[in-house]
Amino acid sequence: MIKSGQTYVKTLTIIKEAGMPTSKIEADNIKKIIDEYLTKDKAKEITKRLDEEIGQKTKNSSLRESLSMLRKLYETNLRLKKING
Image 1 (cartoon, rainbow, N blue to C red):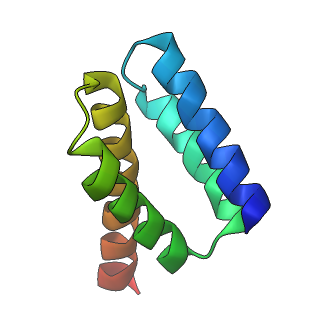
Image 2: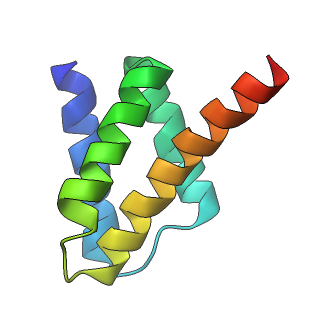
């Protein structure tokens, strides 16, 4: 778990330093990395928390958009799985 957090934080730091919103392809790649370390439920939980506690409070619009996009990827993915499964 610690390794996944470190990987995630490093990835988000790169996004922030780039000063631009994350593309869909980049967000999908971040999601793939997170999925290697966390269950879908844990990933959904952490992306929700990051979005609420950091993304929605930051003045950095790129970070805000990136965290929101990641959260939506997990919420949408789980919703579609429940509908189809």
